[in-house]
Image (cartoon, rainbow, N blue to C red):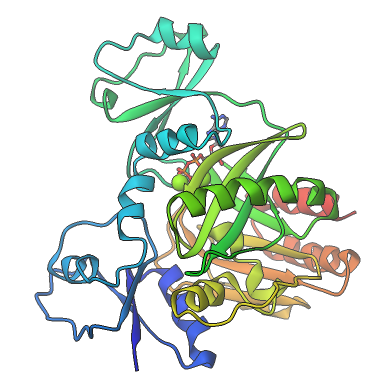
Length: 357
Ligand code: ATP
Ligand code: MG
Ligand code: MG
């Protein structure tokens, strides 16, 4: 039977393989960073996907990306470059933070005139977890680093109320499927926690779905895509798109009978996708730079995903999904978790509890 190959073998690929198992889908993440010259046993009807939007040229990555069934092949490069991604959003008239390309002749003063006192420079490619950002502050006369010219965009600083994201999928027949919006908490540019579903976000759901549908339709996209947004009052501005399963969709592993990983596989394999019906509130907490602790497993309703990566400060090494039959039970789980977590987690965990009160 056909296999589903994944460009990349990090936690997203591993969770895809895990989701494929009960459906007897043979999912094969590939370490494309390896210098191996091995010839992969790719069949003509195999399907190729990716867990990342960018990858280095290697013997293995070439075999996968040149396969005729590499789904969404041209989309990856287009979204991996913020310049082409933001241009796409503008072309589709999907609202996004005002921006421009930082060119040879771009002057700091001109950026401040256009966007205000604080301007955020973002590297066109390679940024993640807030790495690849540089703030220009008029008051401090910060300047554009020389090697950021033509390699970065400049964005208006958005004074948003909060950050939300929509994870959805498009099937090959053009139908779109969506989970409810998730509320996201970032700290130092890294996603720390998500909560979904949240009743108070439901008035924004249709608007968000229309935006992501327009984007996926325009790209003739198949599979899961994530759209990160800033909420400013009743308005949503797209921050960025990810053509893959996404950290802010990890809550679906506990919150829906079809997780985002399974949804992606079903779309790729042209399997049926019934209505997605998440019901109970889930809090997803990322484990960032913390050592493994079996005590987490004693928390009622906690599901641990440990990525088996070397623990380093600021590195995502796992996540916990806290599920329960109501908000009060999630709060109990969060209180228990607080006792097992270091100082930098206390405020974010309290933030989630406030949201659920
Ligand atoms: P990710 O890990 O989500 O891929 P990233 O490094 O690609 O992150 P962004 O998502 O663009 O970067 O930005 C990271 C965070 O920085 C955002 O979630 C938000 O908190 C903040 N941020 C980004 N752009 C802006 C902006 N224009 N104004 C204010 N804050 C911003
Ligand atoms: Mg990003
Ligand atoms: Mg982001």
